[in-house]
Structure formats: C-alpha cells, structure tokens
Image 1: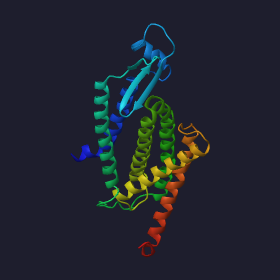
Image 2 (image 1 turned 30 degrees about the horizontal axis):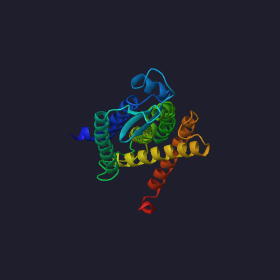
Image 3 (image 1 turned 90 degrees about the horizontal axis):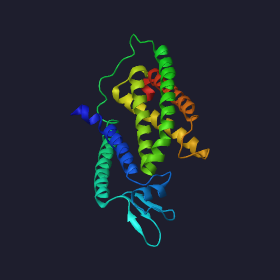
Image 4 (image 1 turned 60 degrees about the vertical axis):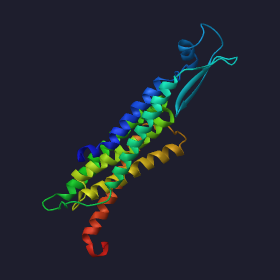
Length: 250
C-alpha cells in the first residue's frame, strides 16, 4: 500500500495526459476544424463551418450557417469525459497533497559522512546532476509543444505540474545518492523539492521575460543545468557551514 501511495501523483498525471488526448481526439481538428465538421456532420458542400469547443465540460459543436448548428460531440461522450475528468483531477490533487506531506514528518536515520570523500561526492552531485537536468529539460521542452497543441490549457497545466514534480523527484534522487552529508531522507526530499522548484521557476520566468510563453525553447535546458548547479552548490555550502558551526546553526 505504501508503494502504491508513492505513485499516486504519477498515476494521476499520466491518466490526465491520456484524458486530454482522448478529449482532443473527440473534437474537430485544430488544424482544419471546418473539414472535420463537414467530414462528420455536414452536407457535401457549403460555406466553411465554424467549430465551438470547450474543454470542461468537454463539448464541441459545428455551425454550418443559417442556424444549422450540430453537436460534434454527443451528450453521452461529454458526460463520460466530464466524470472521468473529475476523477482524474481528484487523483492528481490527492497525489499533490500526499507529495507535500512527504516534506514533513519523521526524518528517518541519518547517514554519516564517515569514510566518504565529500569533495568527490560534491563534484559528482554538480556534474552528473547538471547533465541529468539538462537532458530532462531538453526532452520536456519538446513535449511542452505537444502538450499545449493537443491538450490546450489543461495540457499546459498538466505539463507544468509534471515538470515540477519530475525535477523535484530527480533532484531528490540525486541528493540521496550524491548530496551533502550527514543527511536524512527528509533532508534530501526537502532539498530536492526546493531545487526542482527553483530550476523550474528560473526557466519559466526567463521564458516569460523573452515573450516566448507558453512554449519553452531549447536554451531552457542549459539554463536549467546552470541553475541546478548553483542551487546545489549553495546547499553544499550551507551544509558545510552548519557542520563547522553546529552551535550557531541551532
């Protein structure tokens, strides 16, 4: 049961992305909605049709002019997609709450720095972590386009949550394997969450300032890697300071 709880957010986000694909496929084509309307509902000829769509509740109609408006998506489809959408949303929210709860509670056993080359560990954390973040954000930048084109605003929101969660999870794993010592699992989760949030915040603000939202560009990947390395180095510096001055840290 505990193992299943850890995957609640991932399952919710995955189902959410599937839901957006199904809804998108149930609507007129975004490239040529008039052709979709004529192919499914319209007469063999006539003026271009206009499509009116809504993501929630999912619905789509085609207007062929002169008051001839027809439902592209049936009422049954709309109801089923609305109910499943609410269930998926509940699963995503439950996953977010569960994830936030992992940032508090029992810290667990501490791993000491005995017999560990901290200089090498620090270097590995910076180097391999930055490379992993570089690759993750490069892939995310490409998926960002597909998520928004095929999923609209809901796809964009799911992409945002997925990217933040992914960066936080990656930073957590890297911290547990190559992060500052001594440390606990709770310390790693908190540092990972902070690092993931900072990295995403920087590339999001940079993309907004350059006027390129909602689409991330490939230059976001090296920016994310640099931001990650800076954030991690600061965490190592703070950890070293606390270890050198334990009394003042209290």
